[in-house]
Length: 126
Image (cartoon, rainbow, N blue to C red; front, side, top):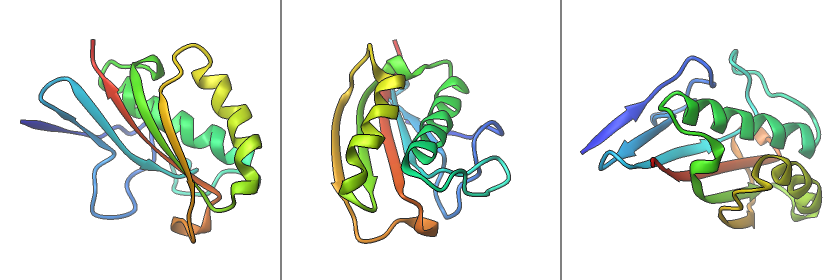
């Protein structure tokens, strides 16, 4: 059993996928988010601004189904350059200071729209 998630408070998907979905009525899978605003424009030209926008997009998707960032149990961070890890981590910590989900981070060859960061998340409804 799954329920697709769609909110006008986060960017529309740029491909054939949903913003996220709820599985088994408990698990929330948020698709990889890139730093787009509601009009589909890239926000920021540095890693800190882009990371902030990505996490705000994840937050909006979670809030649309009654969850918050504190419900996140796992994230995966994709970076275009691992040299941006420390700066990304500073912003990430602002949002996940208390909840500290499990996380993996990778440098990848290229991200959609040539952005600097993409983050996907898994959360659990309480």
